[in-house]
Structures are given as structure tokens and as C-alpha cells.
Image (cartoon, rainbow, N blue to C red; front, side, top):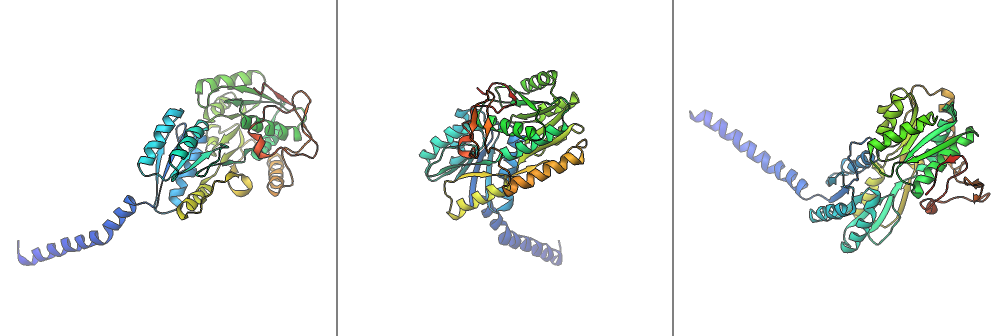
Length: 366
């Protein structure tokens, strides 16, 4: 090799080394020393086009919105023992914030919050509070009221099917809001409820959907983790569907989709994470609805007439403005007993303990 060629190669090697010295270590430090490590766990798969996917999208938006945040995720953490082990492992990896999203993650997380007082715990949909433990969720009742209006205007049979996982207080509240919305435009509306007693049993969801359709319902909706099975089953039977949890559900019903609501929590969770980073986090009971961006409506399906769209959008504007309150009395239960007195309002702090159905709902609330 001649000296001139050697000098050129040496210069290239030296320049490369200088570049690596200037930029490489800084990039490595950003990865090795994140400003916040967040551990997030989900009860099911994050590709379910439902609840888990919506939560995953919300959590990962934090990393997009705040540079230097590291997220450790675990999906299909369905039981309490597994949740405890998963969160312990995340904390050992440096997590200073835990976001637990499944219903049965609440008490394992609450217990660990006492063991790890320097870690912030946020649970989705819960009610417990502590010095370093809080919870967040959307405000689904307004959306369910709107979905009821759409169903009430689209039905021919005046019968709707509601596939529910469990007879929980919030689930009953959703069903009641749906029926109240339907009845506001269709006094003959009836909602038939059937439980699967599982958040994610696809076989049961398909069987339950078919059973409801066989009873004459012509609109199906649900409160299970993934709406995909219920929606695709209804689609195969030529029955309208309304989605919940994720805005990704529409793809399962190209023809008989009406609309749906889903969680859009990315900006809200980004704000929560930012308070952890700057040291201003406080244990706050947080509920965000469509009016403030925590939830959103899905697009309408191809068979939905403009008059239905206009009616739903008009009521949505009134709900957002506070001109309509879904659970303002008088409201009676299935047996005709007044549950919310005239002028009174069923507030969020008691919705989770609702154990009754409104007039027009067919099924057992327990």
C-alpha cells in the first residue's frame, strides 16, 4: 500500500472514530438512562382490536410524546399472581411508574404500592386510592347513550342484544345508558342482556351472539375485552353491530357496522407521566370523556342514513356542552321502582356499584 492511500484510509478511520466519540455515547446514554421507566401490563393481547389494544396505544403514546421515556410491556397477564410477579419484575428493571390495565390488576397493584412507596401506580378503571396509587378511565356512559340513539333509529325489531362479560356495576351502567339513549328516540326499544362470564372467551362470545340473534335482535353490542368475535359473528348473520373499547373494531364489519366508541387516552396518560417526571404527581381519581379527548366516536358505517348521523351528532354536542345529563331522574328500574328521583343525578362515584337495570332491559343484573 502506498503512503498516499494509507493516509486517506487513516483519515477516514480517524473521522469515523471522532463521529462515534461525539454522537455514539450520547445516544447510548439516552437509552441506558431514561428519564422515566414505565411498566405497563395488560390482561389480554395488545392486538385484540379492543380494550387491551386501546390501552396499549394510549400507553405507548407517552414514549412518542416525551423523549427519553422507556416502556416495559407485558400482555396476557390475566391472573392476580401473574400480575404481582410481572410488576415486581418491572420494578426490578427500574420502573418508577406502573400502569395496570386489567380489572383484576387493581388489588395486586394496590398491595405493591405499599411495598414500593417510591413507585407510582395507576390502575385503569379502579376505585382504590393511596399516597402513590390512583386510577384513571374514560367516561363511557355518554358514548353508550349516543350508541343507544343510533341503535334505536336503525332497528326494525326494536330488540338489541348486549353481550356482557360480567354483571359488574360499570357494565350495568353502560347497559342502562344504552337503553336510555335508545328509548329517547324509540319508546319500544328493548335491550336483551346475556353474560359470557369471561373477558375473552371467543367461543362463548360467538355462541352468545348467535343466541341473541336467534331471539330476534337486529343490533348487537358488547362489553368484553375484544369486540372482534361479536362483531364478526353479527356481520356474518347480516345483523348490525356497535363497537366499544377500541376504534379499530370497525374493520370486522364492512357492511353492517353502525358506529362505536373507544378509548383515546394517549394525551391524558402523557400528562400523567409528565407529572411523575416533574414531581408534581398526585393521587387523583381521573375520568376523561369525549368532551375532553379521553374517548371518541368511531366513524359511521355505510348503511347509516344521514338523519341518524345528524341526530347522534346533535345529542353529542349537547352532552359535551352539559346540556344533557344521561342519568338525571326520574329513572325507574325493571320493576318500576324509582332509582333516581326527579331532578337528582346518578353520579360517577356510585356508578360502579349499580346493581339494577332500567326499564326496557331484559336480563338479570346479578
